[in-house]
Image (tube, rainbow, N blue to C red; front, side, top):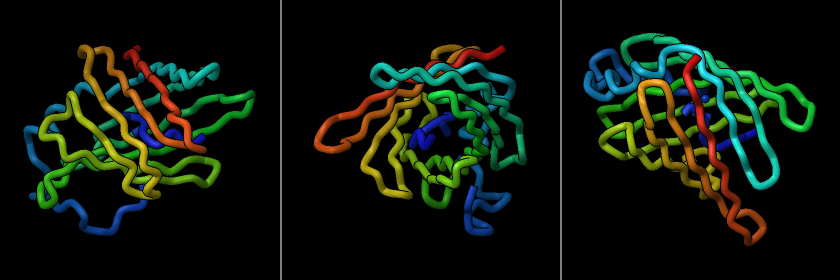
Length: 161
């Protein structure tokens, strides 16, 4: 169930040392702290709806770690993801690994978390997503991508439990 961008569809295969202890920007990481907790997310993409439960915890001063479970077309799926800020590259980084074997890295050069525009860096699918913090208890992600010469879009809303 590769979503490109989730919380964030936000998800981990990073080279060691990509972010050093001194490399995380305190202001950027502080803006992520509202995400720590348990979330209920609903994603709509055309006629399809995916319901997901996510738990996000502070992994270190540089990263938040999240895990999520969902069901799509009756099939359960899970994912792990990490989100952080790389000051050396002045970009947000989201790394995800899904239970079906898919994985991805998305980045954003937006200076602040909200709103921020994200691109699928690997695999380079050409998709983009916009993360918006609606409140301390809600965020949204809008994603679009060209597939088979058609624009495919999805809208995700996550609410904190």
